[in-house]
Each structure stands twice: as structure tokens, then as C-alpha cells.
Image (cartoon, rainbow, N blue to C red; front, side, top):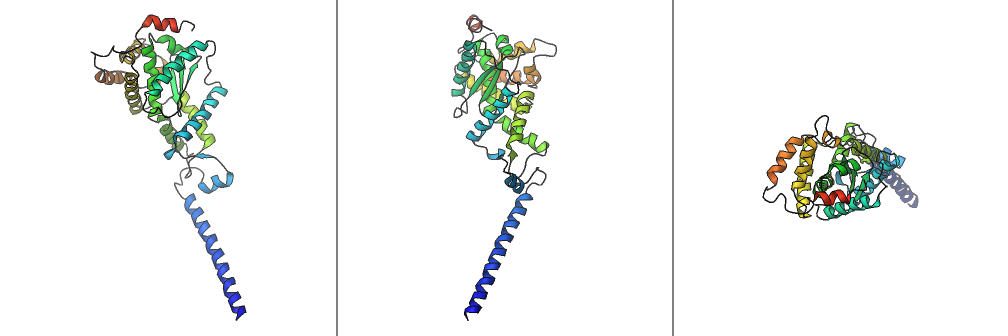
Length: 284
């Protein structure tokens, strides 16, 4: 009798183990078959111990951490050479940026504003609150309201999480997105490429303009600044500043902004004193 009971439990134990192994294999196969066109599988990522970023539901903390790594790569690779000849300029840009960040639609993340030592008229941003303003753009602006309009626009891209969506689309097109997400090293590389090339769509630009204008108004900057800066750049002619070449449909954007700004209050607010601004950036 005892022998029969032993045989029964032994068979049960073997069957239980086989069932568990079968279940694990079935789950592994199921995971690897999710979105087969998206690069390496869940199982392979787990085996190789690769850190991944799940872009579809990335948290604020994860976005800021990834933005920090992208920023570090931009700086270490020399693709963003930080201006360090005048602490007053760096402090001034940060002051404007932090003022706008507080009244933006995403004030709950830390923002880092950096001056890039480059005479081209340009500005860009990457995820997680990192904004870059070229010295050439600072000098091209006539007043603080014009400069604030550019900073507000770049914050608008961060508010709209445009870099996150662009990264997702780039990863899909390159076959790098797996069922688990995006390999972190690939995410950093794509983030750097996007920051440098700035391939913003028409809808992204219009949304960033809308966020930026709203932000300027809440921060008590004169809305006329955004129109003054964009019209000035359009009048330069020729190939135009790189800021405009990477931001399509500028004439359409100006028309949309004109419809949103009341001429009677366009000059209401701070930042229109040209002389004070030129004195503030004289060290450039």
C-alpha cells in the first residue's frame, strides 16, 4: 500500500514539474511572438540583461533620466559645445528659462537651460527638460521677449513629449523596437540624432507654438516677441537661418499666431526694451 502511494506521488510530482516547464515555455514563446517585426524579443532581452525603455508609458522620472543620458552624450561627443566664457550669459538664459518653466504646462519636471557656443541662429530641446540655445540666436534677438519666445517654443516641445513620440517612430522604422521596449543604448543614440537633426512635424511645430505663446503670456512676456522674432528671421532671405530650415511651414505658423494674438494687447507685458537687452548680452 505504501509503495502504491509513493508511486502515485512520484508520478504527480513529475507531472507537476512537466506542467510548469510547459507553462514557462508557452509564456516565453508567447512573449517572443509579440510584435515580431520589432527587433529582438522579450526573452532575448532578459537573457542578455539589456536595459530597455518602454516608450508607450514612460514616466516623468524615466524621461528625465533618459534626457540626462542624451545630454551627456551630446556634450561628450562635442555635438553641443557649451558656452563658458561668460557666467552672466549662462545665468541670464537660465533665469529666463526657469521663469517660463514655472508657468509651463509641465512644471513638475526639472529643466536645464544651456547656451551652445555656436554662431548659427538655432535652438533645440530633448526630452526630460533639456533646452539648448545657440549664442547666434541670442545675438539675433532684439529683446528679451523675442528670446523668451524661442525658449518657450522649445519648452513646448517638451510639454508635448514630441521627442518621445519621434523616438518611438524612429525605432519602429529602424526595426529596433521590441515587445519589451527599446534598448537603452539605442534610445540614447536615437535621442542624440533627433536633437541634432530636429525633424519636427507641422503638427508638432504648431502645438509647440501654441504651448509657447500660452507660456509667454502666463510668464508676463509681451506676445509681440514671438511674431517679431519669426518675422525678423524670415526677412533675412537666402537659405535662411537653420532654426527655420528645421522648423517647417514658418509662414503658416506666423499666420496662426497672428490669429491667436490680440493686437490691442500684443505689446502688454515684459521684455520689449531693446536697449536693456543689448546691455544684458553685451559680453557676447
